[in-house]
Image (cartoon, rainbow, N blue to C red; front, side, top):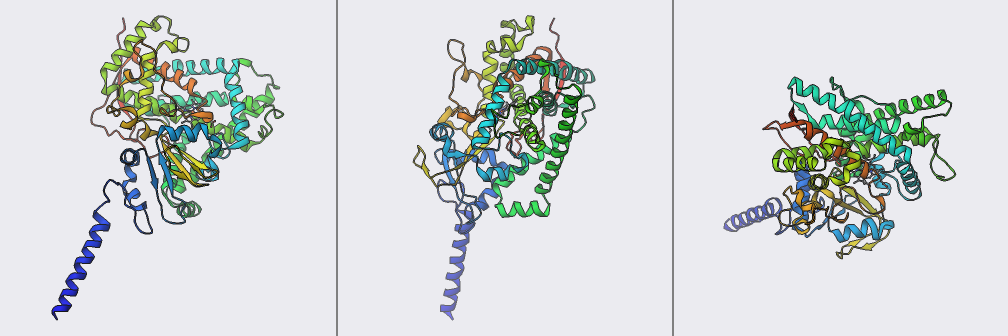
Length: 505
Ligand code: HEM
């Protein structure tokens, strides 16, 4: 009898120890337990609601590179790195070995064959043709006049309305509409006018938010699961399908309207108002052999790539920037002083004097260091490789670079990495401090560097100068400030503010 009791007690203690070990005790120095079979997935799911900050913690504790292991046959294994030497290797020196890859295209399938999702020759054709358009005199003139008119005839009257009414407004929503109208005018030549007093919900903007969240979820769900959900049409995958249909419908209308316009004008379009869609429809296919300007699907994917690249990104950067300003009034005073010193108030010409606004440039970079609009990048290896840090990469494996975590690493940016300090970007002689793009990755690095960087910086400077010169903005106290769990790092609950006109006399 005594021996049975002893056996039972020993079995109970043994079970207790196993349960304690499995459920409560994490291995020293690790944030994710490696379980049998499920590997690190349970821990990741528990932390998913704060995935951005969790990636900061895990990368800091693991010395900037971390190997995630998922359950077998789910394709979830990935190397996560923010080590600048690895980033340079992946993005530049061994660029051809790290592609977006077929899996990326599957996860981002809504965007079809646009520049963001493609690789190799098709990507090269797209990039070269975009570069040629971006550098053309006509497009530069058209983009400056579009930006200026959207600001003066769209954003300013709307802000004046909110200032007169004294009603709270979600500034991120306003910026989203402003960048959306600007980019759509630039691409299609017609203004969707989402920036109006009525603030109607725009179906494409909502579809973009749904897609952003869906894509992040696809990164942390086994592939068979999200594929099944998509096939059955439920949960976030249902929203993804609806968003896809919305994009098809909206783009089809833009394309047919443009074809009609070109036919009516008999091909003669004013050079200074040449939008991207018109340029694309007239592309020289002898130069860009893989592009199909007469194919609606090709034009749809082109429109979407620009909406994806140029709307949420700039709106997110501006929103986090104004939130950071509300927490740092001295920075507001410094920017206002710089505007006065640069004599912008007299000329009002931000695009020409944009290079002189060094402190503002630094402040915008500093905001994007802490809140990079594109929160992470993803690559797939073609052949096996060894990274500068010594980590081995198998062929066809997944590498994630977290821009969010990169900007917050103390090992890279110093002990004050989490503080908002525009001065970080200013040299003793007052000029802008250059940081290599593999350390400050907000606009990407290497051959796939953002094509709209210059455009976005000018647009943001124009908005900031206009707002700080003419308005006082108060962020409403007590609201929740948190990032969205999407690949575009918007503010989850928006940014509620009140706005008043400044007396500048
Ligand atoms: C603050 C604003 C912006 C930020 C932070 C930003 C950031 C980025 C990043 C990180 C990428 C790389 C994406 C990837 O490969 O996965 C990218 C690519 C790109 N961006 Fe931007 N972007 C901004 C605004 C814009 C604007 C306004 C435009 C267009 C007018 C634009 C056009 C592009 C294009 C065409 C690419 C694709 C480049 C390629 O793959 O070769 N971006 N951008």
